[in-house]
Image (cartoon, rainbow, N blue to C red; front, side, top):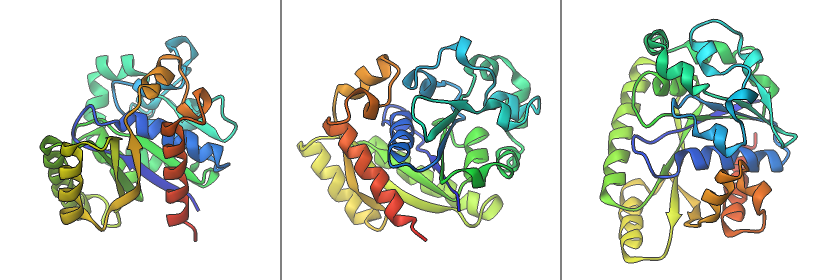
Length: 254
């Protein structure tokens, strides 16, 4: 049975796309058939996987404007068990109709009906805005994974997200669950320790045991168009994402 997980937080710079890409790649390394879908108009996941515009035949914008079936937007990657639907960012930014279509909350859910059982996991990279494409993604999902960095701004974003999820449960998807809260860019400094304690006090039931360490290798890997497991599998960051994949697999064993 497929598990659909949206990676979501209403704040930039916390490692959301990095987490979506490297979690999907790590699940693939674990030989779980995985589909990564990018609904973020910035489309950064394409860079992280080495996709230039000339390599993209179709993408999520074609799904939202009903011009193509999602099967035409699925791309193979370097990893045998990982496939990818890009956001084809240029179309998404310039076509105002797509933004209007995204207010139809079930477009992505309906698009995935015929293909979701082909995968063990579907990972959706959401934009840092709590409407439109994000609502579509969460309506289609079984759970959400929340990457968070230290600091009160991230904690404030987390509070906003939980408020938004209550609305989603009432209106779109009463079954949505929290897959977990993931500490990213983690280092043993005073601010991180204080934030971690506050998270523990307020959201202990959702905190994952895996923490993603701060490392320049993640940026290097993205520059070269590789998930970290292909760029340097023995690095601390790669090992952390492989551990995260294992933690999520263990949580979802039937």
